[in-house]
Amino acid sequence: MNILMVGDVYGEPGRAAITKLLPELRREHAIDFCVVNVENAAGGFGVTPPIARRILDAGVDVMTSGNHIWDKKEIVEYIVKENLLLRPANYPPGTPGTGSIVVKAGPHKVAVLNMMGRVFLPNLDCPFRKADEEIPRLRQETPIIVVDMHCEATSESQAMGWYLDGRVSAVVGTHTHVQTADEQIFPGGTAFLCDAGFTGPHDSVIGREIEPIIKRFMTNMPQKFEVASGRVLLQGAIVEINETNGHALKIERVSEPQVQT
Ligand SMILES: [Fe+2]
Image (cartoon, rainbow, N blue to C red; front, side, top):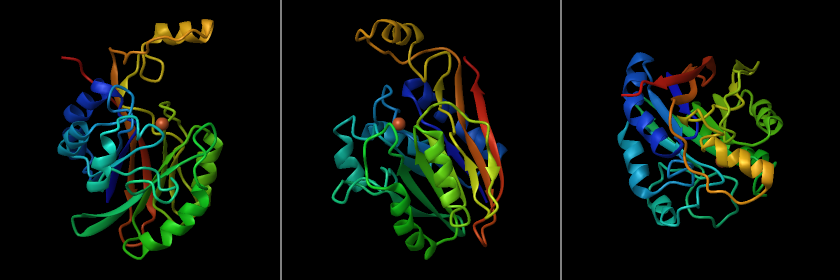
C-alpha cells in the first residue's frame, strides 16, 4: 500500500495546494492513505474547525499537528470530538485530544502516531518512552504504523527513526519546513525522512514574508509576519509498505509545484 505523508500546510496558499494537487497526486501515485500535518494551516498559527473540515474533504485521511496545535482556541472543542485530528501523543495525561488513531483503508488498517521532539520545543513527556507505550497497543490492531515526528533538531528525529526501526512502517519528520534529502529504509524495514518540508509559499522564510524576518534578525525589533505569496510547493513523502508485515519497501520524496492560474 502507498501512504502519502505531507509536510506542514502553511496558510491559505498551503490549503489551496492541498485542494488542487491532492486528488491528482492520489491518482497518479495510487495513494491508499494520506496523512497531512495541519498545525500551520490557519495563517501559519494553528488550525480552525472549518479549515480542518476542508482539509479532510480534500481527500486527507488523518491530520497531525505539533507545537502550534493550540494557537486557535476553538480547536480544543473540535479535537475532542474529531479524532482524525491528532495532537502529539507525548503531551501530558489530561491534555484534550489523542495522539494516535487506527483507521480503515480499504481491506487494511493504518495506525498514525503523532509525536513531538523536546529539543527547542515545549518540554513534553519523553517521546521515546511514549512510543514504547503506544506501539504495542497499535500493533495489536495493525502492522502498518506511520509516525509524524514533529521535531526541530535533526538529531532527535533521526534518533527516533533508529529507535523505532523494525517496529513501525515509517518515521517522517515535520516542523522545520525544510525538506531534507536523507530518505532511506533502515535495516529493520522502517522508512525514514528527517523532515518532509512544508506545503505553502516557498519564496519565503519558512512560509512567511522575507523582509520582516530579515529585519527582525537584524534589529531584534518586533515585526508583523505575514504569510508569503508566490511559488507554492506541496512537499512530503510517499512510502510503499508491505501490508502483511508493515515493512517499508520504498520511500520517495515529493515536492510538487502548484501551477499558478
Ligand atoms: Fe511546528
